Length: 235
Ligand SMILES: C[S@@+](CC[C@H](N)C(=O)[O-])C[C@H]1O[C@@H](n2cnc3c(N)ncnc32)[C@H](O)[C@@H]1O
Image 1: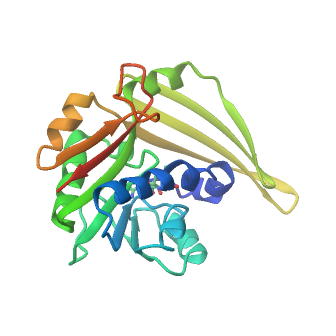
Image 2: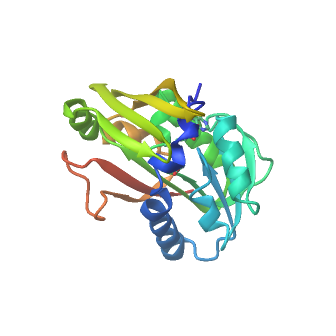
């Protein structure tokens, strides 16, 4: 299960930074490593914030496990093709120049075997020389989240209380969403679980690809204090 049935109600108000955070990295990677690219697929595309930008330049496709997130994406972005699919088991019957999976969407896969199944699906769906671009939250990030107290957001007319708990390689984001409906607030609660793994274990699962970049947010080699890793791999 992907979750996001309740989180979709406030996702865009709480997380309105995905295009700013990830589109420049995707565009630069394509420019550097496969400038002739025409087609792109995003896995875990959510509400379409990244694809709405990339569709200005490429023929874009998105898949997600949450029908609620896809419904928002489809209303926002009429150019991309959105499909309800699992990123570990999909068949589009065609290949792409680039596949991306951003904003720790891959961390939602709760076993390393599922990460490998996702990589295998990407390998089958990429043209020779095509790019797999993704990011993930590190084990170090999980350790920091566990020490963080609750965060409180205003999301339009609604309120969100977000708490984290993490144990080694597993982190749970507890969302409590107070949604204003007429004059009352209705509470929706949902847990989103993420997993992470040591860099060496992730790289091992990528052995069919050539890893071209495996960097931190500043473009440097990741260290034990890196919170998010960006990877670019070539088929
Ligand atoms: C943090 S959101 C990121 C959404 C989008 N990429 C963005 O940048 O805003 C993670 C997304 O991954 C989706 N997801 C989780 N597990 C999935 C799976 N197995 N297959 C496809 N999508 C999945 C969720 O439904 C959610 O929309």
